[in-house]
Image (cartoon, rainbow, N blue to C red; front, side, top):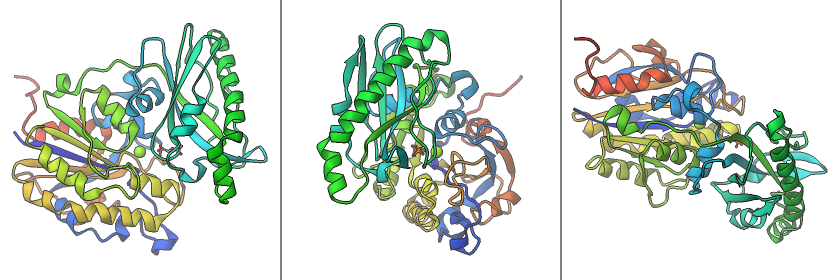
Length: 402
Ligand SMILES: O=C(O)[C@H](O)COP(=O)(O)O
Ligand SMILES: [Mg+2]
């Protein structure tokens, strides 16, 4: 049986970029090691969740790991909360939150300039309103999680993030009569938060330095904690997750992965790429399956920066050379969780390149790892096919039938 390293470059897929002479970031990147791996196995295109679906990182990661989001997904919030280290209790509801910048009532940046270190804002927002506790914890950059704890809470409330600039942040609305109380309490929380953020010393300092303030907290992805079978129960493998992104850490943690810490791993474009790969190689002694998520490709896609996306891919490529020596006993899988084309600035339903590299399996004719080259490869699959293929190539599958 082989061990597995699954590398997900978040938002990897792209479309042609003018700045890159009509190439995708992956096509434009210098990527000898990715190309080498792609010539040692099978490649193809993978549609996250299903063809043409604009999957979120949450639903796509669930699906890649073999958890049908139609069955197990209850919203992004609970994963974000778990990923920043909050514990959810029965009855709690959780949101993913963005710190955003508002000027004259309009959103000018949904990510407050990708602000860092918002911990003091989050602790200033924690409160109790009408018997409901609000627990707020910062994640990476503009991200945070908000947990509501109290009686009679409903997750049937609308989100307050309009997902666009030049519009105004919304109040929440009840989507069912049983959510009237929850919705009213959230709106009181938002009103209070706006006052606190407006006069907070950190925001005053940012403004005095000519930077964008983080003067709005926008809520989305509401949900209650889902119950999912453990990855070990499903596949009999001991698994570890290496990611600096709370959402991914939350999903993996709930599936029973050991969620590892790595020096210098920060979930940003300047994460410590080398330490991540060396930690994965070291972890092969203890684990059968290692999930790595590099977030930088997605960040560059959202920020519409093709050159940065290319650089992130080159950073990954430059540290994976040691993996090329492991192909005898290890299956290396590389893909994205969805496309985040720089020209679009958000996720699209375009398929994503995928490769399965290991000794002893068919080599298709693909020698280059990019969106177009792999379209000549072996596979056209969806994310739910990934785990069965991994189980088969790592010699771990049970026979179906006698
Ligand atoms: O980076 C993330 O967390 C998401 O993929 C995109 O979310 P945002 O558009 O709120 O930054
Ligand atoms: Mg993603």
